[in-house]
Image 1 (tube, helix red, strand yellow):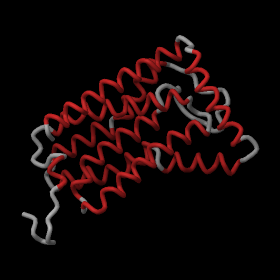
Image 2 (cartoon, helix red, strand yellow; image 1 turned 135 degrees about the horizontal axis):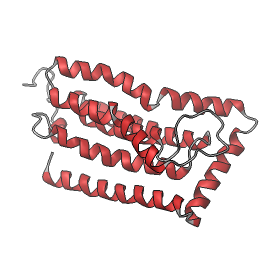
Image 3 (cartoon, one colour; image 1 turned 90 degrees about the vertical axis):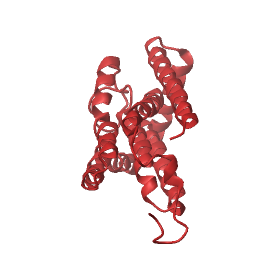
Length: 225
C-alpha cells in the first residue's frame, strides 16, 4: 500500500469519526435538521410497510441473509483457508475486522444507549445507535475487498465491488424501511465501520501481498510466479 493511499485512508477515517461524533451529539441535542431527517425517513418506511406484510418480509429476509452475523459465519471458512495457506496476517486481519466488529458494535451501543424507534416493524435486539448492520457490513465489505480482490481475476473485481456496494447500501436502507433504525444510526454505522477498518489495516503491515500488488494479474494463464 502506497504512502499516499494510506494517508488518504486515514484522512477519510478521520472525517468518518467526526461524522460519527456529530451524529451522536446531534440526536442527544435534538438538532432540528437531524430529527427531521430521521423522522421523515422512518415515516416513509412506515407508510410502505404498514398493511403490506410482503414489503416487511422482503426487507427482513434481505437484512437477515446479508446480516453481519451471516457474513461472519461465511468468513470463518476464508479465515481457515488463509491459515492453511500460512497467510497469517490476512487471517488475523479478518478475525479482528470482521469477526470482532460485533464486540465494537455492542460497546458503542452501550455507550450511546439510544432507544429503537417506537414504530419498529420487526423485533431487534439491543439499542439503536449505531446500526450494527451498517457497521458490520461496511467493515466486512472493506476487509473482504482487501483480502479477496487480489485472489480473483481482474475482470471479476468490478462486479464484486458493485455487489458489495449494493449489499452495504441496501441493508442500510432495509433497516430504516423496517423502522428498526433511524437514518442517523445507519450513517453513523457506516462511518465508524470504515474508520474501524482503517485501524485494522495496521495488522496487514509487512504482509508480502499488499493492496496495490493485487492489481498485477498475469497476462498469460499459468505465467504467475
